[in-house]
Length: 239
Image (cartoon, rainbow, N blue to C red; front, side, top):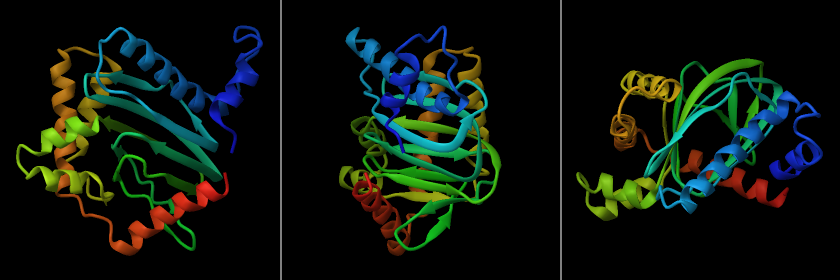
């Protein structure tokens, strides 16, 4: 893998207007665009959420510009992408996040040190947990990512849980393949990202509703959770 800013520096440093950027770099460029915009908004004291997300990919390309909006305590992004056989992804965020995939992504594998497991239709990834994926076949997919401010998420969940239970819940990864009660809300939020029509409280409320879903999402079994953490250790050791 190559660090995103190094790839962009080589391509953009000379002249972004004169040198076309390869499609494989678009994913990295979108991440940096979001990060730069977040830094600017925070400097204006408009937002409390601090976006800190790294995504490195190989043979995975965006097929459309990323649609995203940042709110006071949440950042939501809608992605459309395609992955090739043997494509790979590495992702880590300083904030907890929920991803909802709108099509079957079981051919994408979550990697561990010795084995792998199919990527679920909805996954909750705690802050700081690294995720590594591998593509076993060509696939076109779309998904909604929602990044939450941890303190806000604890406060929100504490309305129906003891605070200690809310913290514990947010520190454990979870997943589910049945997204029948998630997909409708996720699609509405994606539509709002595509064409904002209402006050920001509308989108924020939908994001909060999706966060509430992690209460009923199966927590990863110890062995599977260990695979995720082993994947983290492997990534660190391999640089």
